[in-house]
Length: 144
Length: 419
Image 1 (cartoon, chains in turn yellow, cyan):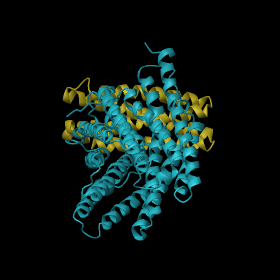
Image 2 (cartoon, one colour; image 1 turned 45 degrees about the horizontal axis):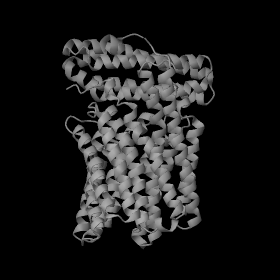
Image 3 (cartoon, one colour; image 1 turned 30 degrees about the vertical axis):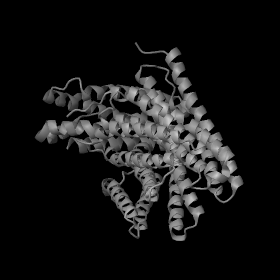
Image 4 (cartoon, rainbow over the protein chains, first blue to last red; image 1 turned 90 degrees about the vertical axis):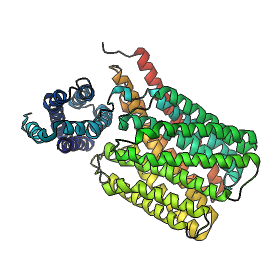
């Protein structure tokens, strides 16, 4: 339940990023900036959903405070920093830097997503049991 | 059960790089052997040819794949390889000694070196398989990790059969099943180890790097079962002298053709449209694998030996294409990742670690090497040119890796760090 919902959200973010990257590659800079903002907001919202609701509930259920969720928070920090660098590069029209940082960001984001999808979300699904459906609704209701 | 997810899972940079940086050294050595012995390398049973084949498949391909395995298991597995630093040191050292001993044994016809090669290569390969394989069983759901079981088992079998043959060479006494052992050694090595590992990696990286639709779940679930069953039945057929063993080659060829078609389709339909050298390597790799399958099929049908040589060279180049494409992404990412994770604010971005022009240079030289090496089967001059260009390509690869490591070291020494 959690796995499917969050995995779909990962894919949606990937597609937002490729839209921005493709627009910039086609030299449509203004369109790329708007599309990147959509990706930026969607990704940060995804991290917020995890940090403000999902991880906290999981930690309360399992008592695992310093484990995988803490590691994911650390990776969120790294990714947020990369997103900021990309946004700055884009605003200063440093296209090469945007693509250069974007490559690191994309590999890191994909590895991060993979860890969550392969290990963390299944663990959360097991920990939440029947409450997973309610959690999905809570995550859907979270405002950006 | 929680299996990890920590930074500690990313092995130190040296674990992976020690394997990668050895690759161009063996590549240059291979180019020299081809350049100075063009006649001999085209005779499949000639000792120089056997030395060249093992330099390629062990010194270049297996060496890179071991480095990649150390990295992939850590990232995908959740269960890190124990004592990665020490184990990588030993496995790498034994592999290097073993490869030199084996090539020396073939070139100089020294029986003692066959024994040394058997000990060191056997130790390195079986130890590596024994280290990683247990981590791939149990509560594993990832298709790539499950897919990595077959290549490691096939590699172990390749090594065992290799040791049997090495003892025959050492004693200059060949058993009645020598040809069957040799055919099985090739089949397990080429298809079970190399092709299967590349398929397992593709299942992961094609979708991840290029944002494509995933490979079908039927494909992910059954590809390795089909390869395993075909390989085992083929070996059984060979040892019992049953007819029609080519049927199993046909099945594996059909499966690999399906893999080529699916991979090219996904690459063409990828969401990320940005031009990337690694995509060119994948596309060229698929073209080379197609050539290998077609020429091998034609060889089975016609018995024309040159076609078998083309098939083997094209297959080796296919594996090298994927390796070079992935190395060009992995090395800059690892340098950036380790510096960035250690808190260095001015960690160079990936495109500055291996600049695009240099990455394109490796690709251009690789494409030229492929054409000239394959042409070399029919025209000796082409083989000589191929050896020169191939040497240049491995030289540029070595420079790229040294440049990346230099940037890493300079940032460690002079970079600004958080906190």
